[in-house]
Length: 483
Image (cartoon, rainbow, N blue to C red):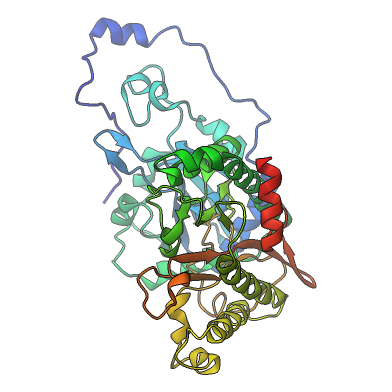
């Protein structure tokens, strides 16, 4: 089976093109080359990454697609973001990477030769550049030609139409990053579950667990822009409080900063006021803001290189925590601080969650909320404290905001921390408004505090330390921004 060739994607309401217009459109266009010295950011890092992947699978062809466009409505596609493994191996991050494929071709003792199969710039002697709504330059902007893409990446390039020929006839042992591009899956005859492909996905995740200094710099940039976005939100609170959908106003304010400074948001912004904060992934963001309640803002900027920040702050919309709000907030802060204190090379990944949950369980027991002691609630066969906190307390961070998720358990969830790993610590309390096990004053409180940290030689560095964590510091910070 072969991949279909690239073709013209015209809309049903396009006007017909006369022979005279077609002839006229094919003439008198100036060349528009990219600057000869342009390279992908981090250019020197990518050969080493590809070499590490090559060493894991000697003699096998490795196919890593960028992914395909997905229709949002009729002839409009969702904004495209290439798969993180493709980005990590090539440095190519743009929306123009849709359908492109990286192939690591076995090359004997030398390992693999990387080849990029790309759709080059629309030629001006045909109709694609002005008639193709999905890929034509008049519609979506220009792409590099094959030679320019090779200079950008340092990788040999071939026309995307030739990928089908590569996949025809006798094939070497092949692994595919399956589930990324259905046409590649079909062309390579991938079964619904192939352990070889699962191993490729796992290794691609595990190779990204430890970040190099360039990556840490990109992540710090994402965090810094996110900090600015949180400041924007606080300044916008007076307007948001007056709007009938203040949560959405907050979402828009943060997303403006993310789009202005980077590629956009790392994930859909959570702007949850009052009891909406008890919904772990509240993204409707359609509620009004009650000045007597809290705002849980979980948001992150994704850089142009597609590295993600992921930060949460819970803010008193009045500018000052009430005694009950502060009681709950201080418990979550103590849990987060206990978790952060465990972070160091050689610690188990799960240690910070366990430390945070012990603090939460003990606090709930002290409040008289738990029907059993904290020790009983923390027992694996029990876990009753989870009614009020439910989810895990953090995850790896990188090109994906939940990074390296395909890694095998012994390397990630059951593994140990190493210098250069970047992760979040984010315990929370989600005290549902209809939970009759809670006293009335606690119902409807949702609190999460989330920070981004990099493991260092002797502990961990709080990358998001420009945002206050302690309740009094949050109040002072808000007052300064609102003055």
